[in-house]
Image (cartoon, rainbow, N blue to C red; front, side, top):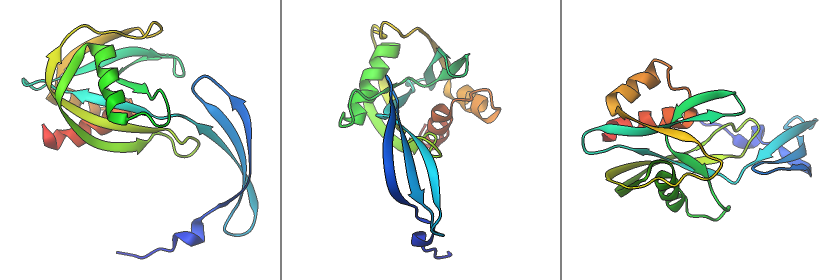
Length: 183
């Protein structure tokens, strides 16, 4: 394996200015010094982070949600997910909360699949992905501004939908592919 010196590609932050405080995003403008000494501007979207969960029952069925996503003006099929309530919120507890809120499901078995940076070119958003098994069914309690349909599909069909490009949500694609070897 090749050895690389990351020092030769690191940028040094020289200034940071908050230019926008939104509901779920904050935007900072940075001036960074490049390794060649030149200065460049960077725009960074700051996000509290999120957790997402792929619930799969004993019969091999996955439970996903269909919901409208305003930034792309489309309805997507995705795993249940939601933003953290604070930077220090336990990510597993957030996943459990979101699973219950969106689907009514609880789970006795949890596996942390990975953490992923959604769009590191401009955002620090990190989503923790989980696999939930040994499901128990109950009542969903979506947030008052959350409208979604729960969809039950065989996991193998969900995996096929990912590989055919029919599921375009990145967190769902990653969770399904990572969970494939565990299911």
